[in-house]
Length: 267
Image 1 (spheres, rainbow, N blue to C red):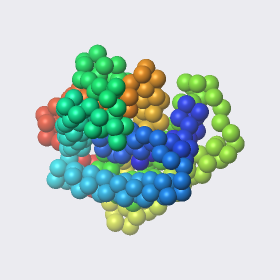
Image 2 (cartoon, rainbow, N blue to C red; image 1 turned 60 degrees about the vertical axis):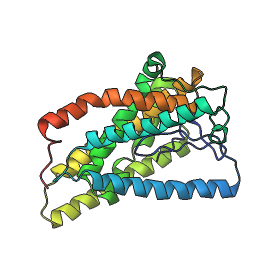
Image 3 (cartoon, one colour; image 1 turned 120 degrees about the vertical axis):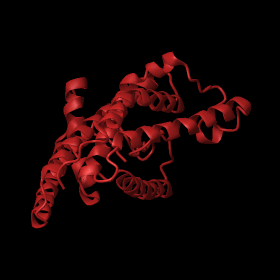
């Protein structure tokens, strides 16, 4: 779950909280500013984050089932099934889904032009999710979040390159603290592996995948925001991204099938 705060284009507060899981993404709507709501969202974040991470770690052990792209694509398919079910429900009972933010005036559609309009956001989502899962396949669960922690640094860089925005000293100091923490965690993982006489190639691959995933984590909300600025609802964006992500995943899944899985680094 990722919250980006460094750019006004990705501004977030207790009045608007976006939740993004390492799995099929649905964008949650506006929430109240009460303490109960904030605490509830934090607890939900903690439970779902740990649950999804453990589920994904168990789903593709690199020594027995090294197919992280196939697992991720399957998650997209499941998300599309649920989204299509919501589409059918809305068509038959237009007012029944207003409780979850699907209004009768916002018809969910599966038009190819609409789906293709979110191809950039879908590509970033695919990169974020797939590289995150590759990272998880090669590192321990305890190091996984640290390996993906550089999205703040990537957000600062993208904000400057894309929007020509500089950040406050407080944001830069927070980014420095996270980066130092990443380095400390990486050194600790190296020492643990050295005590076990294990090869460090897996850790290196996991860190590299985590850094790539961090870049896409920072890029993704920018592209999603642009999709929503074109008048698309959050649910329509979810349909577009999940549908287009399957197309992006197709070559990676084909490679895994032909190669017999993602090559595993030495244990």
